[in-house]
Length: 467
Image 1: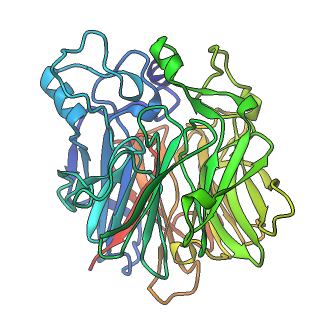
Image 2 (image 1 turned 180 degrees about the vertical axis):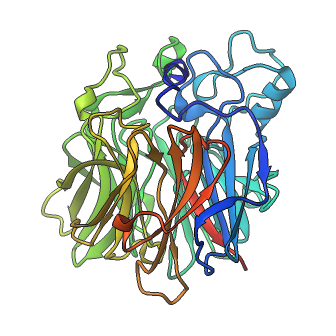
């Protein structure tokens, strides 16, 4: 996969950059809002060394921090110095291949920890945490971006931890899950909760219908939903040297529904047409129903069938879709209704409405004639019914990251604020931080912070306001 990525660098922004940088005074076009005081942290794969057969998902994590204060902007990037990164740095070469597997010629005495901390970065309970779904959270020192070590909450949790925990906007509680909870490529999941002060209040494990790559999950005020969708994990494949993860649509689509106050052995499993979802926009309760807005693929991109044959590229695009679950007990099926035909990914909402009905959502949209990833070239703004409220497209060839919403103030109305997104300028081969008025994306960026180099296409980020 990395070979495929690097061979396309003339027209994509997927290849890594080979350096760390500090830029204390960045040029700005337009005017940064004075209320924007804090740091946008972004995370994504940036392999230190090219490894044979390595998947894009497993590149070493690199953090990018854009600090905005009183109309000024600065930038810093750092690799997350995981045990894997440090071992390879000391050796001067790649020692791991895909999904944490050591290369055949790696010394026997090096670390077995192939974690890369490359997917998300959040702030909760006084800790800045770099996340990647195969390992514990990695605590990061704000400002310096130094790695402080794994965070296991004083031994209260163990095993994998999701890259997409959810923070309840009312209580401040963080709920999380982890797949492969009983070991690599196992069907066990973990579920837990962390109080606003950073104390684990719940941690337990349960069995899913099969071993699946579970990237995101769904949380409402009173329920948790676990999607088990057929990017399947197989130790048998891995032991034969084949892909540990593959697309097996015949396994079917399951979603487990559990009350947040309930027990994992009370999970009710719903079924639907086979699909895959990497990311959830938001979900809420509507009487005896749960509504969840997701970005749904007919077939998973970036993964092949178990025999190595590719999935259908025409079905490898995500579209904005609404799932509806009837909790009355009349059916074990949930419905899937596409709300738009536009290709898109990386959905976000005003996080103050996370888990509750919301009237504003945003996602990065793509050109349907180009490959799904590497072609995200605009932003769509939708209302609570899925209707488009705005649509902005970049100049041809440019690409955009996940749009992160920042409210104007703590008591501002929902959607009143800005979207921050990193843009790659293809012709100049460098990146900008774009600032949009969140309710008027069609007007284009109100301010651009200019970098002298590019930020490779990555995954997720979050805003941490100044105290």
